[in-house]
Amino acid sequence: MFRPAAFAVLFALVPATVSADAALTITFDLEDVTTAHYTCGEDKPLAVVYVVSEAGNLALVSMDEGDARVFAEAVSGSGARYVSGQYEWITKGGTGLLINTLEDKTLLDCRLATP
Image (tube, rainbow, N blue to C red; front, side):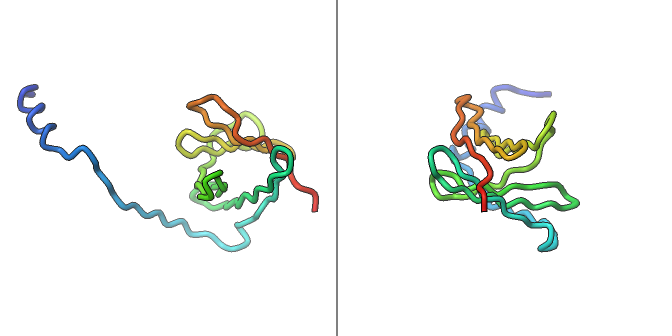
């Protein structure tokens, strides 16, 4: 039988901050990795690394803070859609959009760079 009072006492004993280390291993060959170079906004370069594997497709996108985020491919009507937390990286044809879905805001509007 569930006792709310007992649950509240146990919950109060749990620390407010919890941290955990996690690791993910995905096996792929180097020919499964490609890099696409984009120009965003006025003239900001962006390199996106794509990994195609049997486990699923990934995109590694550099964020403004200089950190890269791993995006997993998600269902899309057309083009490709990758998600990572509150962010979406959407590509179609020669364009790419980085969107913060919580703020409903386009962070980057990109086009494939010409070599």
